[in-house]
Length: 279
Image (cartoon, rainbow, N blue to C red; front, side, top):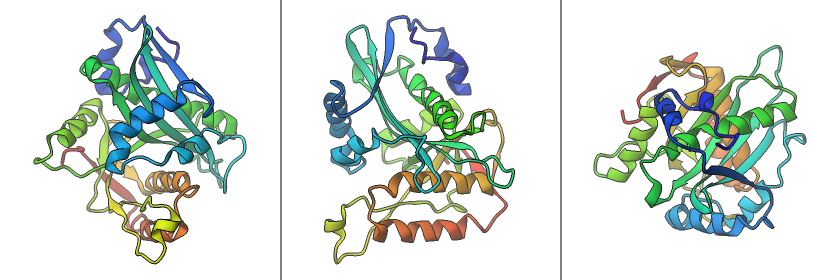
């Protein structure tokens, strides 16, 4: 079994996945746009997510591969990974995500936040348990980012921006139930009206009003999965981390309004209720 497939990193609800036979599964990390895996992996993800407006442009993804967590951007150490999983010679799954770490301030130790972007298990391998590994692999990215940023040992929070439940959309409900069974929780959207910024490039936004997308924040607080509330400081860290990822390619006219709104609602409460993703 590939050394990156660590059973101890599996979410509580995915723990049974470790019992399977994963001896033939390997994990490859795309290092640059010149990597032979880059083009096919991007095109496969784009065919699934880009056509729905849920993925950044090719040049944005290529630029993220150059991020160096030892060289923070406005105080945020960024480490992007695009992973390709194979069973033997066959590509069976892929995912991308970004770890964001900040050095402790005034004694406080902010969590390393991993923004979970896209995860795809090929149809012939769905239901095999690979999705559980895709949810676990970002922990290693978080540890590497923290080490490079000088804050090794910091707590880890995984976060996925997900659509709100809609019983009329079966595919959406399947995704939400999958994360719920794994042990992820949702920051109560009634108190956390999170918005994803408008991804359109500056030239497309010129003369128009940006249209942010309302989404929910589905999190795994590693080691604290059973808790029903999340301190406001952690919620702030999560939101700031996501916007730190986006600030590199999102037009300021689209990003600043949602950042300002988030600063207001994250300051209203000392903690935020965590609810099931399907609630």
